[in-house]
Image 1: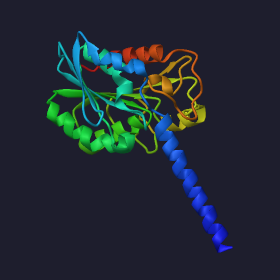
Image 2: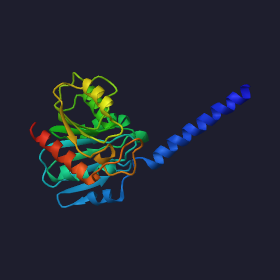
Image 3: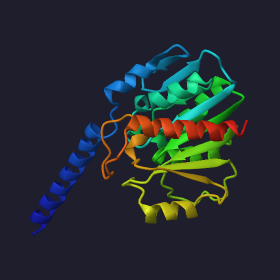
Image 4: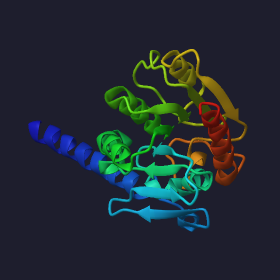
Length: 240
């Protein structure tokens, strides 16, 4: 009997490991077209050894932008967003976290923000990256002027955070259905501005390969990213 139980437990462990390996192999890999945004007339882009992206604008506006990726999603998937903001003057940092988890990028990102010497920062967090961004703000109190949350779940109460926030989601998001979205709103300040992109899903905020448990979008990732970039930039500019 004990032998059968041990074999059963071992099989469950093997299956769990296989599921994790599959997730890392399938989810979050940048699409080939993401690389085209590493070159542009208005900025220079650097990909560091761990995958961290740094975009330096040709005409800096004095502001920094931190983009915290979703869980398992590699920084290169956010190159389109980084290029957009660098093109309008932001110095952009997209950090890589250990095990491709943004919560593991909080401490290194805070250190890099200090080293880049910007007068202030704006932050975008996609999915788990939104939670990580809020943790960074709470733990390190950097000079963050505004935060854009893109389809972010909230595992804790952040209703007392005073940084101005905008929350953007797609109405076909399989990871953030209405019931969960309502719970998220209860954990954020009442001042948050909410914007819904018709036809958008969870994956469409970046250029990556696959998102488990998501619904198909009725629009392209390019259009969804452009919508989120423009709405976030407009919100940020209002805080200058």
